[in-house]
Length: 199
Image (cartoon, rainbow, N blue to C red; front, top):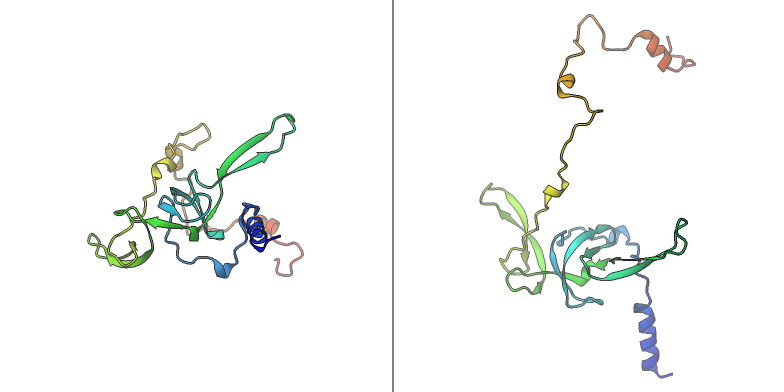
């Protein structure tokens, strides 16, 4: 077997046949400062999705990876269930991409760039805030604001809810002559009967 052919087969076995399950990352290797957050548009620099752009759906800090919407899709086969043994299901979902394989996009040139944090003075509040900038320039890469409207839940009272009038009703009036402790009989029931400190 030729050396070039054997090296090609070895390379294929090391890259193509590896499982998609993320590996464990030691605590000392975890990234301390993340420059990529959820909602950022990033450029994929390597892998089967090389050269494509996508939006970060989730940041997996425990394995130094990110999930990008509709990118690096994998298929999982689900075994037949007991209620329907003949039915098999296939689902597709995003596999993690290591953060070193993606980079932020310059909002002006739309090219992948390096970024860094810098402290600047906010003109509205006059306080120092940390913002992301394209490395070596004054171009800011703003963070996408989270849409909190989808997290707001409409409050609806049910039959088991306490009414506001009943909750505001005063049922206890403190008195200096009445101690705020339970009666002695209740304390005896709660205390250890074999304790040497029991009275």
